[in-house]
Amino acid sequence: MAYDETLATRIRDVLALDGDVSEMKMFGGIAYLVGGNMGVGIVGEKLMVRVGGDDHDRAMADPHAEPMDFNGRPMRGMIYVRPHGIADDEALRRWVDWGIGYARAQPVKKKK
Image (cartoon, rainbow, N blue to C red; front, side, top):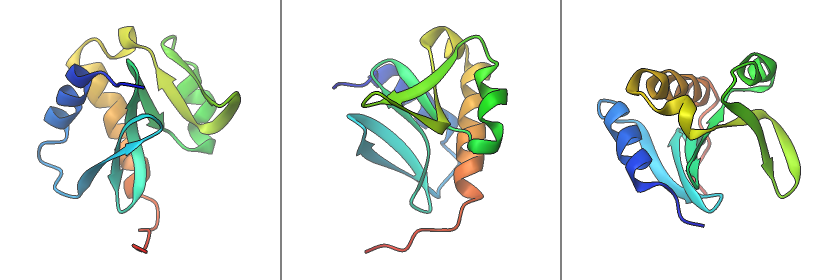
């Protein structure tokens, strides 16, 4: 599945000063990781955000959020944000900061 290249460019612009963020192809799209932990990504036109289990319901209260349903199984702590929910740069930054902040708070994964 292809991912929205324009959205990828917008995310890279948000993350321009974050030298500890890396990109990796994942979930048929692209993901942005910190210390080996995914924070945000793109699947098709949707932004994928790792919000964490404790904040899942709060994130889902946003009218543009939907459960991340990968292979028919919703993943608690992961959501999709539909394109209208990230149409402006401020909204995109809010979601990216949330996901990257969550990833940054997790223990660094050791490289294999």
